[in-house]
Length: 309
Image (cartoon, rainbow, N blue to C red; front, side, top):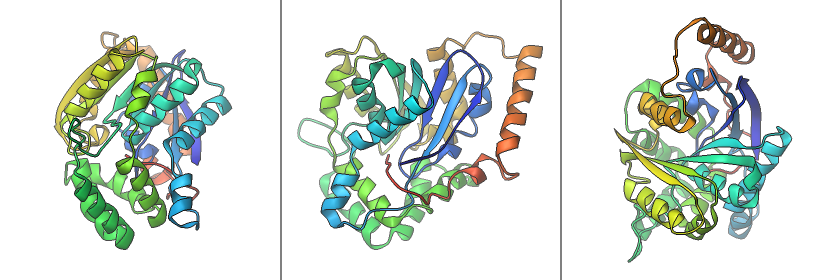
């Protein structure tokens, strides 16, 4: 369910960067050089490239948040990690929450970027989507995934700038349409709100002010529910931007928040030590990545499956 795990950078602290629906590790490219200066950074890809031929019942049993959480725990154990700072985008945010409940020893802090426990509106909850909208979207994915994705990707990114859209479009269009549909069902019809009551790891919630998929009201709901239960600390930060992918359209703003959480905001980013670390990282990346950059190295999403917003 996961592909291409690798660790870049150096430092005593480890960051785990986990992308969401339709993405790949390439969505972190603009942030990676900065983060890897003082941290070990684990990158990996959820595998969205194939799907089981088992009908709707098999689809529902295959695509579950719990299964993704189990895979995340397995990956972190495989890489011998503990006490990591987990940065989960979109659906991967809730995956991290579930994993932290099952294995709190693996996580020191959860940074949840555009996460949502429930996308469907109800009388007492605003998730961002009416049921009819979700049903129409799932119908479009099932009948014409490519056509739906061509419209959805720039909308989700919040920009028509090719440098922002291309990394996501590349992995999005490589998804198996059956996997895309199964994952979308899991994400948009699911309800993980109860998980928030059991999260006992400090959290930082990051939302974009004009994100149609996970609006700031969702973050405020998550924060209040976590603090009312077991979570020792849950802060919320809002980025003044548009779209669901601040890594692509507002990377500096997101890095500023991560630096504050990590305690690096006031550390000197200049000097020989920093320059040497940056040079070492460039050598490390160039030895693993083709000339086209990390986006080119990201999986052409053709492997096993699972992921979502």
